[in-house]
Length: 378
Image (cartoon, rainbow, N blue to C red):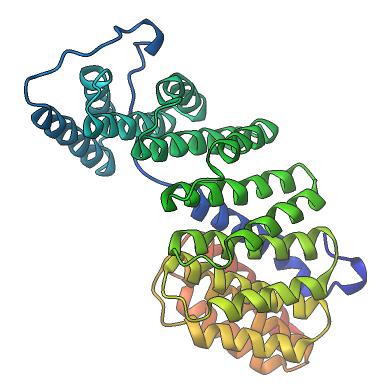
């Protein structure tokens, strides 16, 4: 929570919703992808020790990957049941292969199967599938298998967090770090960075603000000089989360403002959507902090800058942030007693977004309409 001494009416009313949207977005941008599949009826420990192999292992590998592509296409098109069945067919047929490319297909299918099960039946089923698959992954040296293993472990931790089991999720993230943090493989380091970011979010939900602060700092310090876009997304997310902990949890508004400024300056020229989404979220949060500090002219300027920079973007997530920036722009104008101009901004916000279906934007429009009524009736 922010310090009561620096609260201002409009900024306070929208702060909780804004912070929730930002945390959801970061968590969303950190959850990792793929579709899912593994054999739910057969245990690795009871399976035969060696596979039946055809004379041409490249043909077998092609067959495995053809099934994987088929399963992925089905899942991505929304036919999750058929996708699940196809993943399970692949795993049952090829799980005991020792051909490297086939092993890679099985590893990907096992990780994806668990994700599909979690989507179809809830996180408990996803967690059970990950637990079933993990013994197969253990101690396999192939780099591609390690990447799928890390993904499976990561998705299990995400499911645990979704169930509110943050302590178990942290333990799962810690296991990822124990296994893979010394890797030099970029795909594994991406998963390590995501685990570190999500671990910080879980610590914050548990009320451990100091530990969350340290977790975010570790991500920033370790990966700030990396060049891979996927890893830099996590650095930007950690900086955004760091600001929330500093300001909303610890009441250090100047420090919160400083890290948002650092984030914006560092990533302002980014072209990656996930990073841009974090940048615009930081810019919107910066407006809130300036308002909480009573610096309404600076808040107005920051809001106008945000709208000007992002209003041409068509992505739903960014449209929501632009709408919020316009709302905060109107709020700053109100605090500066420029009431007519505040109404003009609110009218434009309502005109632009009243029929917009982007998630979260209706709440912004409704708040704007209520504020406009207050100003008109004053």
